[in-house]
Length: 106
Length: 121
Image (cartoon, rainbow over all chains, first blue to last red; front, side, top):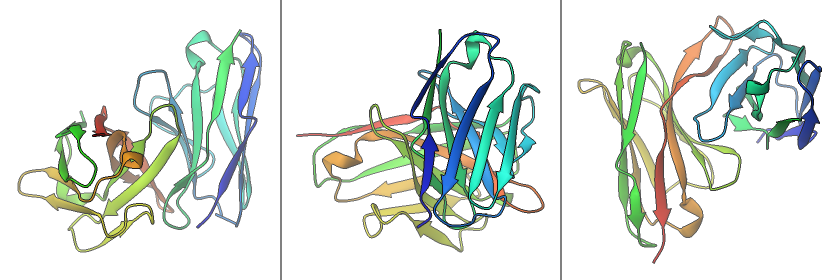
């Protein structure tokens, strides 16, 4: 099983600031990595697939990068509605999720 | 538009069974792999099971292997999860998710709203 480790566990930033979320894989997953956003009380939503491709309808302030074992989700300028938990998921093998990063907006 | 609507959840005693359904619409159901993903209260996401577009292949997380069975009826555009020998640790919101695929990989492109299963005596 490929283990994904996300950091930090919690991130607290102000509107307009830049958020950088990390996801590290225990083995290389090439670029077979997706990011999901889960707002309070809602189902998850696909943000990024293949490490760096934005899903349909996702604002340009969200971007993904990385390959192999180290990946980053960047939110360039935080909006209040970005309050959520963010999960990475690998599809190199049977799917696994990271434990999530909680993004708090000050 | 794509819609996935789960049903069948509720409160069940430990050791008993339950079947979840996921009714799909807005896309050609028989062309896509489908998954179940769960989330225990206050916890993160856990992938549970996948079934291929034609039902010929399935795979399960170790935590449910031998107890849960994923299936689909493409004539009814419906995905199922049969859960047997339920345990307290199976308590979670269960989501069905539709695969989308690029030229290189697949991902959970659409999700249902979730259905709560509570295992308690």
